[in-house]
Image (cartoon, rainbow, N blue to C red):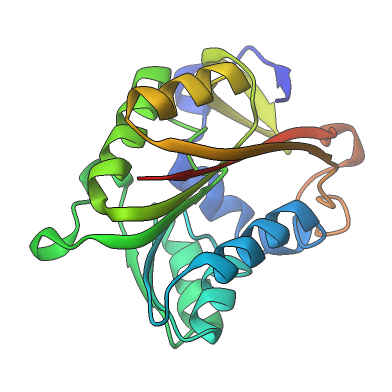
Length: 225
């Protein structure tokens, strides 16, 4: 995931302050992450016409919300970072966006979605228990037969004090086996899972120094309610 670090609590960034500080440059750093675009393309192939989609941790709105909205789907992106929401609103005017933490989010009027996506947004400032609980909540927010794509860095760790792209944070994650177990515990049908590696272009994007970047393990899990 990243190197461990020793910092005081007031030095560690929350998920909100982390992504406010990274800002739209995050999009450039991950622009060449082809497995993510492949997963979006898979989703586009399997969605019904004019589907409703929720993207949790939407970032700048690209490539997920932009690809889905361009295909005629109704898209809501949520993110804890106001900087990211501002960028997404500019980038994808045909989608809707809301600045909100997932812990405070509930679909309006009991709405159910045709698909929900989570791309690397349940890592910073969460616990393993919260990740598992959010997976179960996401199940309840989907229509019967609804699709869920979950992407993460598959390392089993709880409240790890790490440095990511030069920034001190507290992060938690699940191993690949733990993710699959959590999916099945939430009653998801796991359709497939794929692993890959990616070296973020964070230096080129101006986010951090070369010594602050590592090749990341990525896990993409495709599931259905």
